[in-house]
Image 1 (cartoon, helix red, strand yellow):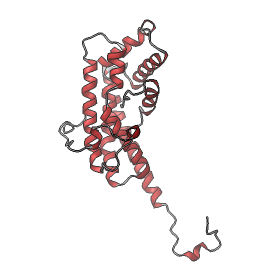
Image 2 (tube, one colour):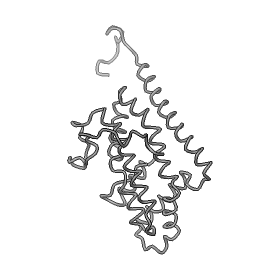
Image 3 (cartoon, rainbow, N blue to C red):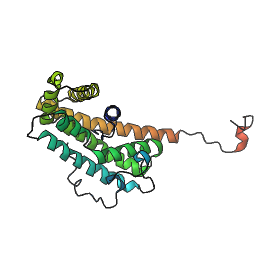
Length: 233
């Protein structure tokens, strides 16, 4: 869930006001997930679009993740299948504007999960972590999408881009390369399996470490055991 956070930060700096890119096809039930009243499906009206925690419940996260992934994949397919020649606007800008729902729920969930998780949120993390890894691979290992990005990158000298646009294009190209876009199909399949498994192991480790930390507290049975300690400590 953190693989593209730095890219979001860069994009926000370069292109103020544009949504950031968030990172396999989500589960079959994703498109049919109930969205009635889900606060993540519309932008917050608070300053800086701060999350509406007064409206958010634990049960909102999973449906929003699923709908966000399905929505972004549809947007990505439209970009990759666009019959028009690739341009900065119809490829890079379009990617920047994709995944707004997924961005909203990911950023909120990440903050809440790191600060104050509970069994319900642990269950969400366990379920969506491999799905998000597969989602990222569905984007970065999409050959048609990468072909458009590579075409722009190879022609970058003649595109008359601003410095910020040139940097963003370069970051996207490098991100695709590092994610395995140039691998053979068999190697991509193996990479997808590794990324999914790695996401599961990372989640297992985080949750096991947190549980062990909670169990490692020192319990003082009575106040007398603290005799001699500074009361203000």
